Amino acid sequence: MQEGVYEFCLQENRAALLGSIASRQTTWMSHPADVWRAELKPYQLALAEQVGLRVPKSLVTNAPDAIRNAFHTFGPMIVKPCRSGYAVVDGEERSIYTSRLLAEHLEFVEEARLSPAIYQEQIPKRYDIRATVVGTEIFAAAIDSQSDPAAAVDWRHTANPNLPHLPIELPSKVREGVLALMQALGLTFGAVDLVETPDHDFVFLEVNPNGQWLWIEDQLQLGITDAIVAWLASK
Image (cartoon, rainbow, N blue to C red; front, side, top):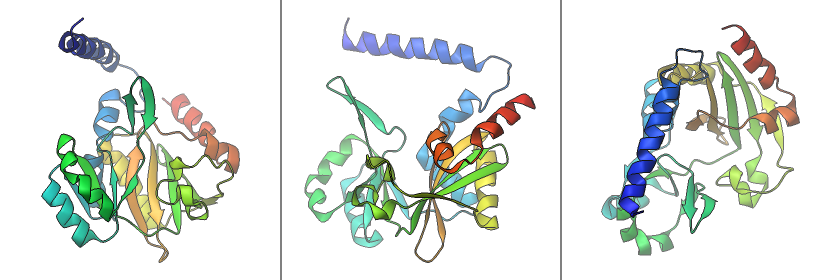
């Protein structure tokens, strides 16, 4: 089968399947259309800022000159995908983590024309924060990512099973902002990533509408499963 024909058939199969699922009149946590839209990270950032959450200085671009300019004005920078954190390369699925953008990388910046990405100031971290939202309940955990160099930029990048976690309560203003963001995105469930800075400020990074949570519950007994069951049982 020709490559273009294969891609067309794949798109049609996906549209038929997802369209059939999304059209069902049932209870969703959350509706597939809202999940798809909420996975767009530039959209998340815009809404997060609108509801009053602090967000990093950000640039979504594939323009080499804009990237160079941001590098010299943002200070330390990171780069991350606009949506998917995965790619299949030579038949192998690979994760695409948030990475530092260093001066030596500018040598290859012309290749950025191939694909836009999110370029952001690197926020100093005291902790990474994972806030799992179920309805109007928030289960927040601080992850001591700075205790492991492999986890310092993106805590998902480490294979360390002993990365310290501790339960926390978000400040009321941050909590209100997170819930307002979830409402604006149309999400009932979400795994929200924030940073607590050394000055105890909280900065929104992104939200995964279908993020993992069981490992946090196992470590900290946060009751996320019970909250999900209770929400579903109430519908």
